[in-house]
Amino acid sequence: MNDFWLYAMAAMYGFAGIMHFVKPGAFRAIVPSYLPAPGALVFWSGVAEVVLALGLLFTATRSVAAIGIILLLIAVFPANVYMATSDKFGKLPRWLVWGRLSLQGFLIYWAWLYV
View 1 (cartoon, rainbow, N blue to C red):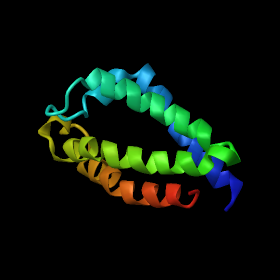
View 2 (tube, rainbow, N blue to C red):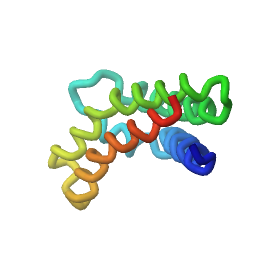
View 3 (cartoon, one colour):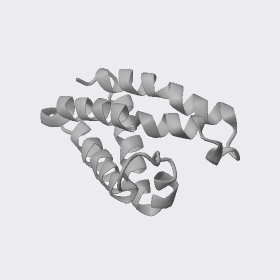
View 4 (spheres, helix red, strand yellow):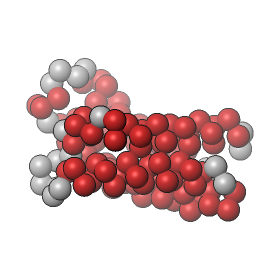
């Protein structure tokens, strides 16, 4: 597998994880109301993304990090469903929120390539 795509994935998750700390309100907004402690969920998912992104960079931890990313994508799927189905995000183009939701399958496949 081409190293470019590995580093692109690591950069994407690293950036996304850092954004959890820079703009936590945006991430808290997509946490469904039935989940407890949205601030803690945003914080810990940001930590997980940064740690997993770093894990992708080392051969010894790459496979575990890729599995972790797959599990994280599954764990955050309810937030993406909430974003796509809630009227709360009406200002966003519908194609964008539904496209983001359908992108999850591709992201899982991409991570699976490094297991």
